Length: 606
Image (cartoon, rainbow, N blue to C red; front, side, top):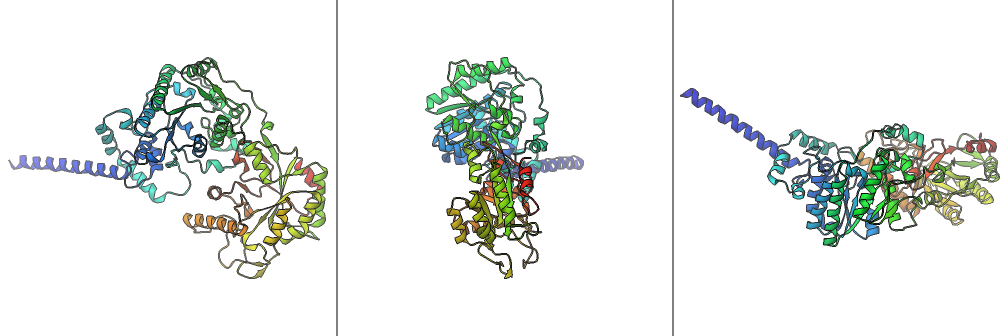
């Protein structure tokens, strides 16, 4: 009898232990909520949750915040590249992006139905491409690819049980990462929770002008050996039936439906037979009007893509401008066609472009100090500088400004046949007394990059040690008034000198040893703010002291309004229309006394 009671007690203890363990797991999963299934009540780390499952987490986010939005973008992950700010401007709306990994048209239909029935919806932009006809109503992973039960009508009990009883290591990983999460976008949090779009803060400031260097990077290697496997569109009928139901829902609810076929890399489109391509676009035109951006000159240059299936946000800017006939934004002439319902558009067609039609080769020269006699690497003689300017003029080079480069990129404004950019670093007084008159003589434009703390000074910051004199703000204003000179940033106090600093010396813009990321970011922002206050405007260009640049510095500077950065890497620069990234980390040829006028022209000729 005692033995029987002992066994019963052991079983009860075991069952109680198991129950307690299950309850602990459920409580832990509810607390950490890595998929956002329960509204992430404790962390509110939506960028993480949406990365784990955008279908579920975005719906949970909208349940709390849908009053902030009145329009939605929906589709697979390529849909992220329609920039939210541009959408809001063109549509006069407040957009949220409901992109989902590998979304098929069943996902799109059910999600569209839910937001239309439960939220205020003025506009619905549905991004559809031929891939949508490959699969239908599939679920690759029950935790990361499933829809919210409110959207697909499944059992709420089973839905929540699945996440409550998930492997607790998933929640533990979220907890650990929340404690060490750095500033830059990470693979475990790829979304901007306020817009629902991918966080492209790092990808949109990467230097991409040099095509060879671009393709040599691991993340773009696929463009050099693109897979050639053929793909079929087995679910074309189901895809179009879902789209037809979305259109009917929008008509009944008074929602403006816009259907867009996004740009595709030409080699990716080529995986589909010409017959399948024609069948897809013809079937789409039977259902609705749509904008087709599938194939154009953009499709043939990998620099317009983040990867082999996702076009860049800057391309999204172009296609929205094309849709709204905004000629102030550059877009290639062959980008986009509007297809009216009932037409038979057939297979998309485009000619392979000449790269020279949308790119420009632009050399940039960097000078420093001028004197009657040249010495060292940073001081050039007046005579040599005069020879340089005369040689440039005689060889037909036209000096252009960085604003000219920006207009070329953003608006497609042509550059002269042989452009050159002239720059001076540090802001020495000789730039005003010696270089400026020569520039005037030859009608050459130049940009002077000043060190904020040294403007108008002949001593080093607080130490009082003598330095070469630097021109003043008054002298800068006089030069700017001529229309030839632009004043930009060499950092307010990031150009520090060993032997003159009282404390540790910063190596250009790089962090100090032991400096925390938080302190470093604060320093960068404050340095930019101080330069803004000094100049009375926000400089859009920064020349990195020593040429040092990092991914973090590029992101922070971009946030502070810097749209162009310069290094001291000696190279020519390829500037690309429609691609602001091609204005980042530009190279410059370092000008010294030893470089003759003939050497200069030979250098620029390549």
